[in-house]
Image: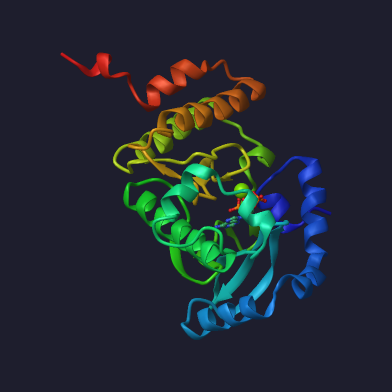
Length: 259
Ligand SMILES: Nc1ncnc2c1ncn2[C@@H]1O[C@H](COP(=O)(O)OP(=O)(O)OP(=O)(O)O)[C@@H](O)[C@H]1O
Ligand SMILES: [Mg+2]
């Protein structure tokens, strides 16, 4: 029998199996939290950001995202593991920027700085009208944000979602990336169907810590890469989209806006 989240957020069959597996991952919790991370969590609980950790939504080598409860609602809690696997995922252009604030060789300062960076960028994107989870607070390697989903379960990644209106999705992607660029002043830099959640026919961008300013020398290359990934996804799903056209909709070339 389908579970309530399977009814609420219909997904592909292989994803449903994944989710069932995740539901049995309760024991992961014990292995996951080292002592400093537990302290960070209790600090956040004392600050009233949430009441308890509920269950893992997703766990990996670099960290995990958990559902937490707060009153009658939920929050998402992202925990970065302090370790080399986490470090290896940080792109060099983003590390360059953090180098001004902390020693990037020291994981005990770098990973908290990375967590803070994700919190700040979520705030900037939200202020620019981009659909991202609301950042609620952080401490050390733990970030608390709005939970994207319902009582029945977390929203699926775009990769796992059943999309009915592909051209509506295309329009929404254009709109979100355009707002990131202007007024947000940022390029996400790791956009793909893995880092977009799909809820009620709209995308919600996540995993934003590597975003980079539009002023950065790498910005255009990263924008083109993001757009390329998503154009590829739309094409595979059956929509005729050219990456060049997608890019122009996101950011018209300067010549076309001149008199
Ligand atoms: N705010 C949120 N609400 C609900 N689910 C979330 C939220 N943020 C993240 N998730 C879930 O957690 C997963 C991992 O989140 P995220 O992409 O931010 O972390 P990550 O370290 O890149 O992990 P991964 O390598 O699995 O992508 C997402 O694919 C999504 O399923
Ligand atoms: Mg991710």
